Length: 330
Image (cartoon, rainbow, N blue to C red; front, side, top):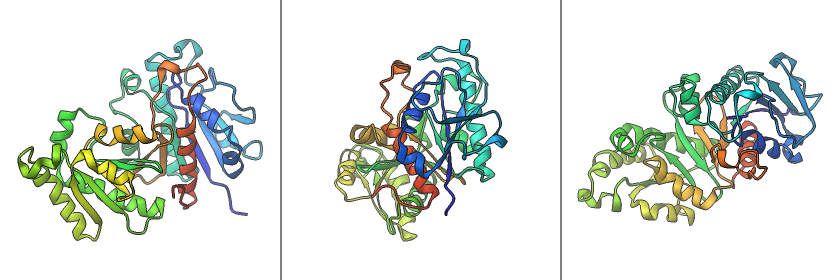
C-alpha cells in the first residue's frame, strides 16, 4: 500500500480565524481518510470542531496510528497574552515560530507539503520581523531567490509580478527580468502541478489600454513586451500585453490558462470577485510545496464560529494532490 502523504498545517495568527477554518476543514472525512496531517500551533483556546486529534510535544512523538491528525503543541503563547480579534506581537511571534518548524520539516522531507493559515503582517511587524508576509519569509527560509505568488481557482488563475508593496513602489520595481521570472515560474507550475502540457498565458498591461502604444505609459514597450518576447522565443505560448480591463474576462471565458498580473490588486480584485471562498494561494519556485487559503486573518469575525472553511479545504486538497503528483483543478 502506498504511504499516505503527510501535510503540515500551520495555525497562523491565533487571534484570527486560522484555528477555526483549519479544524473545520479537517472535519472533512474524505481529506483525513486519504492523508496524514500534522498541525503545528498552540492548543491555547483551540476551538472544538473535531475530537480525533493526537497531541504531541515533540516532532519525534509523531504517531499517525493514534490518529491521522497529530497536533504539535509548541506552547509558545499564553492565554492571557492575546484576545481574539485583536492584533498583538505575541500572536505575531507565535505564528512565525509555527512556520519555521514546518519549513524545517519540509526541507528534511519529513512532511510532503505545508498549508499555512493566515498571519497578520502588522502583528509580525510588532514582533520585530522584517518580512511582509508568508511568501517573502518562506523564500528566505528556503534560500529561494526566484519565486512568485499564484492564486488558483476553477474560474480564474493569476500570478503576480510584484506582491506586497505600495503601488508606487510596485511600478518602480517592475522590470523585464521580474516579469519574465513570473512568466517562467507560472508556466512551469501549470505544467507540473496542473498537468497542462502547453499552458496558454496572457499578460496584463500596467497602464490603461496597455499603454496605447506609449501614449498612456511607457512600461509596456520598455519592460512588458521585452519579457513577453523573451518567453515566446523560449517556446512559451504567451500573448499580450492586454488592457487590464479585458484580459481577466478573456481568461475567465477560457481563452487563457492564467493571467500574469503586474501588481497585487490588479490580479486579486478579479480573482476574489469570482472565487473569494474557493481560491488557493500557491508559492511557486520554492523547493517545498506550500499552499494557503486566499483570505486573511478576518479579525472581525474571529471566535464567532461563522468563518467559511472552503478556501482552506481547497488549499489542503490542492497541497495533497501536489504532494501525490496528481491534478486537482480540471
